[in-house]
Image 1 (cartoon, rainbow, N blue to C red):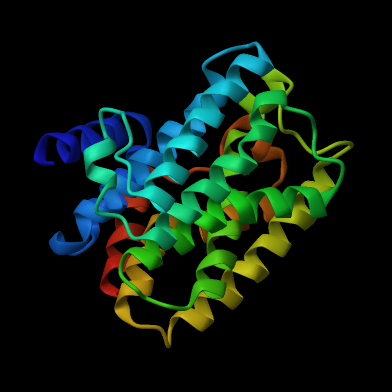
Image 2 (image 1 turned 60 degrees about the vertical axis):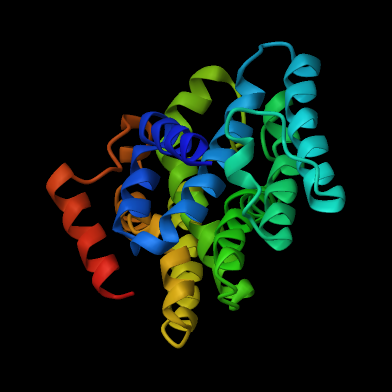
Length: 253
């Protein structure tokens, strides 16, 4: 188990350093579950991009779905290097990963989202489900607030990734111009603030589950105020500002 957890931490540090930093800001007792959950989410998110052939990519995603269902329903260990670390995750967290994996089928084909509603559905089923799964690891409750917070944080990450997605011709928003993207960012901020307000009355475990979204509000505000920064890949704040933002988020737990 310790070897699998160490591997989860290594994979997360290399593939999702911002989320790794959020886990390291969490209380030590909470880190094993978060490392396992986020490393599995990273592996699932990377699966559709491992092949340019949609059917092959979808087979990789389906492998994760089948493995997670087998563990959730039958208690079968996942035959993967990080599999032993996932055995400690509760069934509700596994269901969240399954939901995210099912939604990742869209990544395999990469078609543009027809409208904002389709995009929000995708963000809720991917990022929103993972935030709620993090809360489930600690029986934190407030699932709806975590779902909403996670979807808005997912929008921030989607906007950061949009230049690369556009270059690859995958998972963009059909017909979106700067005005639509700015309006989308404003809607994301409204949703984020509403979820954040609900989480203020939540137990600290729920706020720990939301820690990985600490950068979202700044990203969304920058995108709304200056949407040209999206195409420029200039939505991230400085390293100092990111570290300060994470510190503030940690103190609010």
